Image (cartoon, rainbow over all chains, first blue to last red; front, side, top):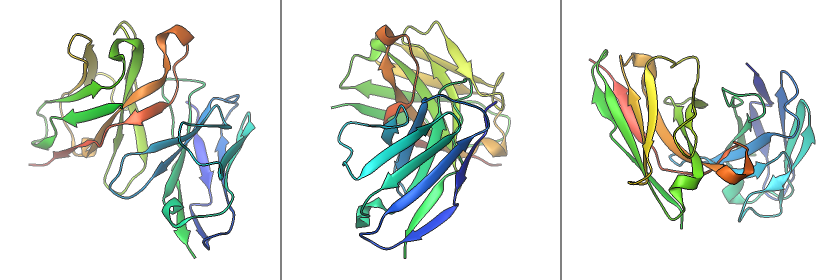
Length: 108
Length: 124
């Protein structure tokens, strides 16, 4: 089973600043990686698939990069609505489709 | 627009069974695989099961294999998750999600649309 790790566990950033979130896979997942955003009491929302392609309706300030075992989600200029928990998920070697433990992005 | 509505959750005693439903609309249900993902209170996301568009292929997380059964009825645009021998650790919000890729792609991938979830609480 592929194990996904995310760092940091919590990231404190001021509105308007850039946020960089990391995700690592225990073995290569090629580009078969997705990022989700989840706000309290809400379902996850797909942000990025294929490591770098934004899902429908996702603002351009969200960008994904990486391949193999190292991935990054960057939010270029944080808006108030971006403070949430972010999860990565691999869909290369499955089952299972493993998720990372999440990074909580909080207001500094 | 795509809508997924889960139902069937509630408070259940340990050892009992429960069937969750996910009613889909706004897309051609029979063309897409479907997932179930759960989230224990205050915890992260855990993928538990997937079913292909035609129901012929089913996959489960090892943690639930043997106790969960995923199924679908394309005539009713609904998928199901039967959970047997419930344990305290099954307490979670259960989400259904539509797979991003249609059957014609030959791929299975992330969930691009999610329901709001149904809460299952296992307690005596």
